[in-house]
Image (cartoon, rainbow over all chains, first blue to last red; front, top):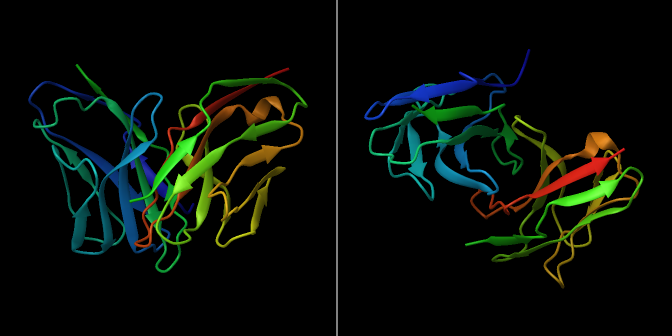
Length: 112
Length: 111
């Protein structure tokens, strides 16, 4: 089954804890993106990666970190420095030289 | 950078009604334009796109035309169904392949 997988669907974080959200794709796409969605708002770009072993900050990178060691995977860590992490997190991928982004099903992060 | 202004929701319609969601944008040059749809609890799905002026994107009965003169990309559907209830996002692409999203417009269709 091809596509983009995000896990877990729901994630709970305790105060002061780092948590990692998974994004895996088997579309062979070069670029991957992480967005944050808050209720009633559009998507805001956290980090993106155009190629393996390279990534750039988006508009709201503070309190987040990423890695891109494999083409298929782009995990996002929400660190304790992110003071308001409750949101819906969406991963997206894009094929080289194409503009269309394809989205995963999302992970909802809640703070206990 | 790019910015997007979308018609504020929520929009509530009866089945078979006509739907229009306005979208205007500011951008450098002539970006490709996208409409995405998000059903409750899910990720975004590409609905349609247009890559140059006067192009019309269409899918599932939805249409949008790239209007360069008015920097607009309004979404329309002639006869909505209950299954069209969702949040709709307009998004122009930047020249480095990023997307700028509007706030989204929530559409509810009643039977």
